[in-house]
Length: 402
Ligand SMILES: Cc1cc2nc3c(=O)[nH]c(=O)nc-3n(C[C@H](O)[C@H](O)[C@H](O)COP(=O)(O)OP(=O)(O)OC[C@H]3O[C@@H](n4cnc5c(N)ncnc54)[C@H](O)[C@@H]3O)c2cc1C
Image 1 (cartoon, rainbow, N blue to C red):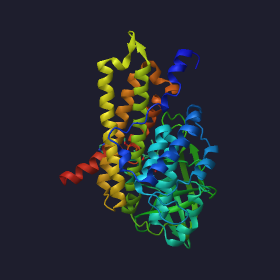
Image 2 (image 1 turned 90 degrees about the horizontal axis):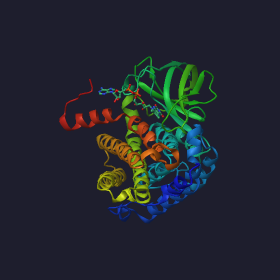
Image 3 (image 1 turned 30 degrees about the vertical axis):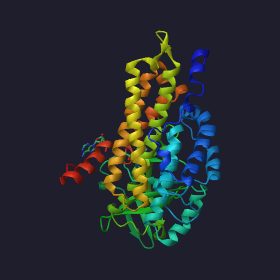
Image 4 (image 1 turned 120 degrees about the horizontal axis):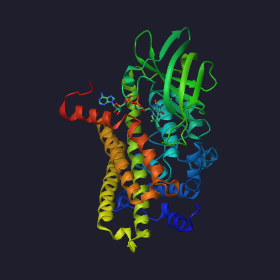
């Protein structure tokens, strides 16, 4: 940044506040607070200083993987297989704190842990869990998750990739679009339709399997650090022991998505908190018409509206986590939380961007990065419209999907 006054405005702006207006922290256990602080220290100390540069270049900071390994933060609701035991709130706090500094690393973990590992944990046999999860828990092997196709996003239930049984193995064909981590991961969970019974099944494809190729989607202006891929499967042959035995229809895929929609609610909240904190600090520092813009009623109204939304999101998330720990979360509850938190977080980021004026669109102040990243969160794991249709069907008893 060339202008010294603007540099002074930006200095430390992303670390100036710790917003917890309704004392969410009082609801957390000591272990959960320790986890939050550990991830916060890593995020603020090691990710924030380098994130804009990686975001701008669209490259992944591979050197941070070793640090994430040391943090011992791979657990989610899984138990055993080298995972770290934690509550669902604890896992949510990891997503929240990571997204508060960088949505791409939060997404990297969400794909690796919430989608890839949880697919194996929820849908794999004991032997399959033992085979893949320990190395993934140690972040030595990285996973990805391939459900979406070029022609089937919201209606992935109609996916067209095929799986044909041939002796002791399966032959996979088709195309996938968007899987995160997929250009460099070690293994990828691929969903394909069994040509014999027409049901969706899950397969563990490894990066070097002949016939598998993944090319990076270029020109992306959200979550630029995450490497999303266009994938081609051309007669990819996998042994039957790489078919996840617990996935016998599309309904089984939904079991995995329920958990990750909860994670998107948490990370959306992290983005919103960051944007709010930065906007508040900026409003207090930025002088116009001889006074801080925070003294303007219009700016205060925006800040209060943002605080209200952020606080509601925080409460949603805590409740979600406790429902998971009590075994009471339903897919429609997760859909409502994903819908509410992602849409509201994008609104909050947009208001923050307004408060920052021109500086709202420079990476130095981080807000535009959070706003762009939120565009992806509103879409992935099912768009806001699809969550709305899921909840609408639940509350009215009428399906409006078609
Ligand atoms: C950054 C990013 C990362 C992703 N990561 C992964 C991943 O790791 N693995 C993976 O498998 N997928 C991934 N996805 C794919 C993601 O889940 C899909 O993009 C999402 O489900 C929407 O599908 P689509 O993009 O094809 O949009 P479409 O389905 O084409 O939807 C376009 C628009 O139409 C609306 N729409 C569709 N149907 C209806 C309807 N019946 N009624 C009303 N509105 C409707 C949608 O809400 C949307 O607004 C990722 C996507 C992004 C952007």
